[in-house]
Length: 410
Image (cartoon, rainbow, N blue to C red; front, side):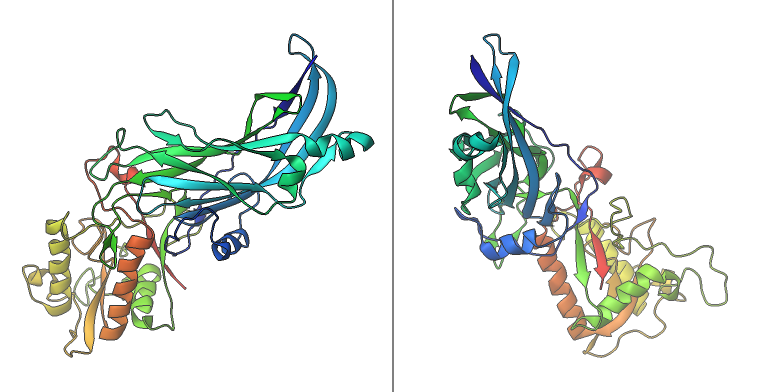
C-alpha cells in the first residue's frame, strides 16, 4: 500500500480594501521586520484575502489543512492516518524597478496541530515533511516563478521564524497599452512528497492579483523607476489632513467634496437660480470602488488636456486667458493678489476630471502659498508611491482599466 496527502483548498474573499499611502520598501532575502509588523498588525490580515498594506505590500494569515491517508494499489484511500492543521503567513512585496513580486512564506510559530492519535502525534506526524512553493498561475508567456520548493518537517516549520521566498516575474511580451500593462496571479502551494506520503492534488493559498507595467515617467529624486508590480485589488487614495501644514487646501477639497454648491465658480451669475447641484468627483468612500474617481494626466503625455485645465482655472481665478468670458460673473469675486496667496483648484490640473472636463464641475479658492506648495508636493509623491499610471485612452475599456484614485480628507 502507498500513502497519500490531500490538501484542502481555501476559498477567496471579495471586497477591496483601502490602501495606505506608503512608498515601496527595498526587497531583501528576509522582509523588513518593521514593515512585517505594520502589515500584520493591521486589519484584514486573517482569512483568504489578506491585507493590502500599500500598493507594494500585501500580507495574509490563513489556515491550511492536510489529510493523510493509506491508499491501496489503485490509489483509493482506505485508512485515514491523521490530519495536520496550521496557519500559514504570507508577506509579499512588489518591486518598483522590475516586473516582479517577492513572495515570502512561513508557518505561524506554534500554530501546528496534529490529529493522528496519541502516539503518532508525538512520533510520526511532527516528522512528516511539508513543502511550500510560490507559483504563477498563468502561462509562461505571462509570468514565471523562481526557486524550488522549501521542505522541512512540520515540527521545524512550527518552530522557525525564518521566511522562504520566491520571485514571480511578469513578462512584457503579453501586455496592453502604452505602459505595457499585464495582470497575473500568484499563490503558494503546500504539499507532502516524502516520509512515505505523496500529494496527488496540492493545496494552495487563495490566488492574489498583481498588476505590472513598464511606464517610463516614474522617478524618485531623479532615479528612474522604469518597471513595477503593484497590488491592484484596492481603493487607492491620497490623504490630506485638516489642521496640518496644508490645512487650507484640505479644507478647500473638503468643501468641494461635501458642499460643492458653496464653491466657485458658480454655475450661474448671482441672482440666477442654479440649474442643478455642482458635480465634483474624487471623494474617497470606503468599500465603494465604483465611486466617481480621478485619473492622472501629465504635461508630456496629455499636454492639450493639462493646458485646457489650467486655462479654465486661470479664467475662474483671475478673469484672464482664453476662457475668461465664461467666468466673468461666476468666478472668484476677488482674485488672489499677493505673493503669499495662490489659486488652488480641485480636481487637480493633473487629472482628466480637471477644470476643462465637459461633464464634471470644479472648484477654485485662494489659499496660502505655503499650504499649496506642501499639498502639491504630497500629490507628486503620492503618484509615485502608489504607482498611479497616467490615462491611456487606447486601452480596451479605458474607464475600467485605467488607474482611478481618490482624495480622503482626515
